[in-house]
Length: 126
Image (tube, rainbow, N blue to C red; front, side, top):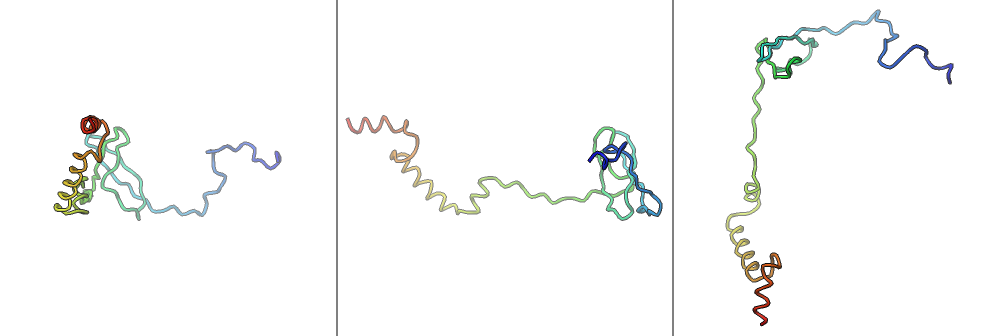
């Protein structure tokens, strides 16, 4: 097995392939300007969709394209609350009926924490 290993090669080292006959993809330089005054260029393919913003390599802020490409506006949905989802499943009349029914059970001692109803049951039996 030792005679099959490639001596002198390491991971991440140089490639042993020849670059003759290879045609590289067409490239372009895209400029970005950071809000803190940093300017930098990114090399991209000519066929690539150019993003409107890019993270600044110096400070990490969101940088805008100097070519005037504007970020597209995303339509944001309003946040749905638990109450909104409940109203999608039940009508107000149904909710009022359920509330009345549950309150009667709670007051009658059939549901709820036992410590709220212990004293009432002792007095009722005595």
